[in-house]
Length: 556
Image (tube, rainbow, N blue to C red; front, side):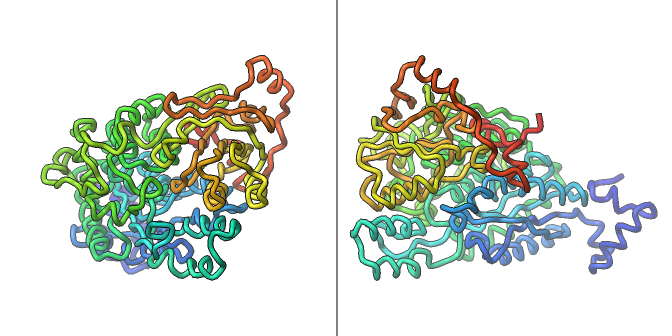
């Protein structure tokens, strides 16, 4: 009887050729009698969140061997949102998610691996890996590399890489001198790891833990801590057990797991990009995640943790305060406690002896920081198919904001205007043609927000876009506006001087012109030529779906 699917291509005499290929690399008959476990490793020396994954992979390998499996490591691409930010490279970041998912699918399926441990840390890598796990439906575990430690004190908190962007605005506004600014390079990020704030990278690590596909308590262990390696070793042991017990990824990445992940994201004030990635993961798992349901879960989940950009504490601080387990302990009555996890226990069983978190960071459900979760889904005549914002990172005085539109058809044009002092208090900066198709690639407008912050305009202006935002942004911002401008969405019809109202409490974003005028403008709109027609971006721009659908590739 064939116990593992890998054995189907290792049986003698029919498959002796495959055995010979493995043996050419030193594998033995004993190795080939065990479950073959892939280690999808996105290690590289470009991305700081991934530079420790070589060591993490070594400990995953140890765990697999300890549990009686055979580890087979292979590489996966990984790009850095921070390095790619604010220039043409950002076009490639969201599209890289699909390449990551596809490459893991190809390696696991082509070689009939029995299970896979996926090693990644950053913005598009963890989502791509989770998409692959859901698509493959083989036993899978996500292991992350962990956050970096915070840096020097800057602007009233431990610095991180966003302090550089904020500092640039301060330098241009004369609020700091050049020596202070230059010193930040050496001091804001003293260790490797995913950036220390609660951006998309760490939000998605927390999502993986809340889904149950990452071992409990491991998503936020700092990258340089020894416990990060012990967690990797445990992941290696656990994946072999999952293979023996035939517990595949969709037993965990299902509707219960996804809804738990949405609630945890709301409770910690996670990145707006989670609203892009969870629908994409759900798509691969055969679970439709509507923005209506997403907002229902956010509205009914209190925000009980505050982490930068919502407050000064960073993700290592959050970990020391109790991390994801302490948050789930507090909101357990709102979660699907019976959901299965890779630990071999249910979510509720994982939380039995978890202590309360440090109330300076993690409050109780009865005494939350906010009564509603950290994310919100807006609708209105500017976003008929929804838009996303993050009230957890927006000053309450800015939850209702009306301003005059200043329109830009690219990120670069908007950034130039901000740096040139052309944006004034009371403006709503409209950045369009940056959606999944129009960008292409749905770039994030992190630089624009940080420049406004540095110039002292974060609480006096707003930005709206069919592109994305970084999980680090604060000020007043609305992204993921759908339909996007390149598809003839209403954002394409906004003109300079139009009045725009953002009303977070009422989940509304409204262009203050009458319907007849808006429809007349849209009737005159002409679809622009695609910016890119060749290479992978050309393909992505043709096949990408709306942000409201997760910006996944659709062939129909």
